Amino acid sequence: MKSAPVNILVVEDAPHVRKRLIALLGTVDGAKVVGESEAVRDAVRSALDGPVDVVLLDLQLTDGNGLDVLAAVKPQRPQIRFIVLSNLATPQHRAAAMAAGADVFLDKSHEFGRVPGILRGWSAAADAVR
Image 1 (cartoon, rainbow, N blue to C red):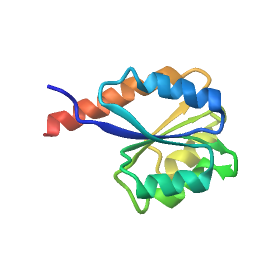
Image 2: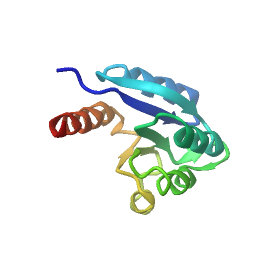
Image 3: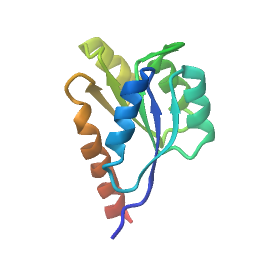
């Protein structure tokens, strides 16, 4: 049985990291990148207006902070899941992201590769409910 498609918005200010994330998402059955952004304003608009199921979100963006994206989107689209990836992996940053509505917080420097497994787990759980 094929997994349902998962529409993903990649929000990352570093183009090379964005490319790496998109390549990693290509290893996940059903994962479809529906948008990319490096800025808060564009990310919020894309998440609210587009068919987005998951946002991969960096905390440091070109025009602000990923927490601003979470604060703007999560109350209006609570069904969107957020995976925050950051080099700012202090307990304070992790706690702030989780309090703002992140579903998962990963240290970009060494937990990057966990993204496919998390997405597959969510997809399997959704398939089991159907």
